[in-house]
Image (cartoon, rainbow, N blue to C red):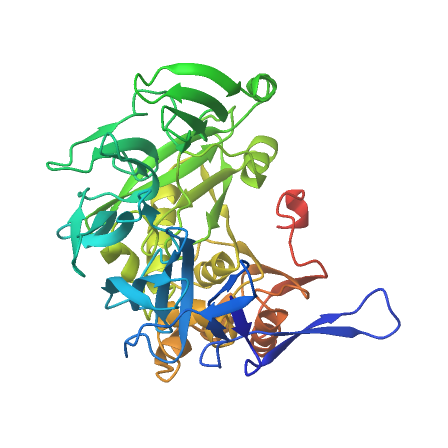
Length: 514
């Protein structure tokens, strides 16, 4: 892959320590509306004389002059699967390219009125390369599209392919794992049991495409799996909700053959400590049943009063609430400082259908803020919540949402908040991210509405902490520098902690962060 960023404007990262005079690190960084790097995919032959063949972009106006190559995978020894995505990220073409000539044949085209999600996932090919499997968003009724497995089969002596959908329903296939051609079975992970869980399934690749859950009988609710070469066995990584472990199972009988790792020492240590109690509460918003995860101290009593911290991420397509095992900063807060911590997935989060995901397009923060405020109203009705000590914390996009929540005039009970490397202005953020969710910068209204500058005057009576490393190459310090100019103009109450490191250690003692 050749990336030509000659025309891409440069960004500077300043370094102030370790030398008498400050130094700058320059690198090309495409922001919204600016020139993107030009990319070219080539195959270099190592047999005989050195020979390079460039793969030819599909001649399709929907891909355009500026595009992304989001996935490359060898399909056979002479053919590559390549996914081409236009800059607007609403049209893509999956091609099969001949390595010796560079000619790319269209195998599947996709488009969206909003944006195309999960474009970097490689298809799974049969051994002869005549059949492949991939996930795509397929309409499933009122909740929009969900990601399911499609099977594309090449016909002999024909340029046409047969495309069949192997799975369907109001749930997502999250990962395609393996294909057993002898038994006509495809193995995959999905959320069919619950959006918070991941289970292993198999499905027939011949009609009526019956499927079977292979891990639903296990005690583990969130699994990851890899198969042996002939698929007689699979390695199951249990990632929660209990202590993670790894074991080998027979594919045919689903019987455990042996444990690879039980993490017994971790289990013993965990069991001897006062760990948080994890509870789930259900909130219904716009006919969607959404889960709030509540972490309570081990010695929790209803009659006591506890401070509350809402953790937000909110990155489109992400997921905060799942059954994955966690021991993190929130665990320390709850166990050592008797704090109630909550997480909640609202509009824009993944695994609830594309309607739920795409509603945030061109209005970033609006629906996410509304949903998180609804979660706060819900939990604040509990008698054990100290309504004078409620706060919010987020990083990057989560820092953007945390600032919006703290400055909200609809819910004034949030008293303090911390934003780590917050995105404050999407015009100066990465082009791929900003343009995906806000569209082209030629229509700047969406960018203006999403800018945090309009919230500066609503932070006058809040305790607001901003932490931002000057060497953060993803969310530049420029975001915070521009925003605090407006905070100063509005005489807002804020504290700024500047760090040199790019990565902020959120596992540090809480008093250092809040």
